[in-house]
Amino acid sequence: MRPDHVAPLPLGFERDGATEEVVEQERGVYGDLAGTLRELVDLTIRTEVDLEVVREVQRDLEVVADRLRPRVREGGYGVHVGADGRSRAWGNAVVGLRNAIAPPLDVRTDGVGRAWCEFSLGAAYEGPPALVHGGVAALVLDHVLGCAAGADGRPRMTGTLTMRYRRGTPLGTLSAEASIRSVEGRKAFVVGHLADASGPTVEAEGVFVLPRW
Image: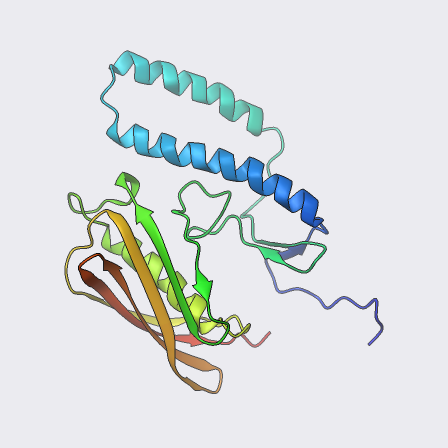
């Protein structure tokens, strides 16, 4: 293989050649924007200002949206790969830096088969009153179990995911962790849980499969 040969990327991945300096600049700008939008989502849910004020804000936001609309890529963000080979899944619904609906999670791994994180879920993730929506709990655990399955650098994808809801998960500060229980060929069997200060609220187990690519 020639030194200058570049292997093709899987579908949805894109080499943009961004330098570390550019990535850090974008991280700051888009991170701030998404953070403000997350606050706006929370305020939209919980505000009790007069309706006329809400109408004024909505008109202001239309003007803001018009400034971003002229240049918009088609489809999702995908995964961008910079000049140093590092990938950025900034549109991801769980960890996406640019995604205002993502909490976002900062998932850590041990490089072998374990993943964990601490995070906070507010009003935007409510299902039953004062509790996290069960689908959001599944979303979070699917991602954290997937991170554990791919902690060794092999990105295994969800094959099956089974949830066990032990009790309601309160909004607020939470944690999640997962680990590989066993590996059989292309399949990794992973277990994990979501927890509050009093202990696990949701348990999960899943089979994660290494893609043929």
